[in-house]
Image (cartoon, rainbow, N blue to C red; front, top):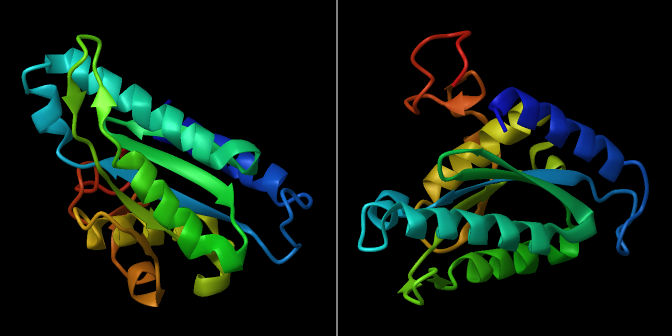
Length: 186
């Protein structure tokens, strides 16, 4: 799914999710976007299992994200090794749920030939209550900056005001592919 369609899908998912209580959440629990990027994906893809191992790692990540989000969220692949999630998480459970996601995404993936491939992911999340906004573009940029701030740590990073202030072009952290020309798709 391309970034534009994903943005519309996630926006629609956020609207549906914010339309009423789900899973014991109260009205103050707004949906929050999270960005997930597999760590060392190129090494998996170029390793002994080749592209089949990379494809299996991507499929496992998508399945794990979908299972984790459940009926509380919507999941999409941005492209390459990146995924976006919009999910409703109660404030009291945010840290626990994101830690569970990091643990889930760090479980080895079994390839078609039976080999186990070590995987892990960087996770950045942005909460409307923390950042004081429901602007999806700002939340996505902050989640992107938080994801890169915590790259290879094994822990999810919740965006703070410092992440919302990171310069961006086309909704992506400045310096990422697709950010060199204003107005062109990333």
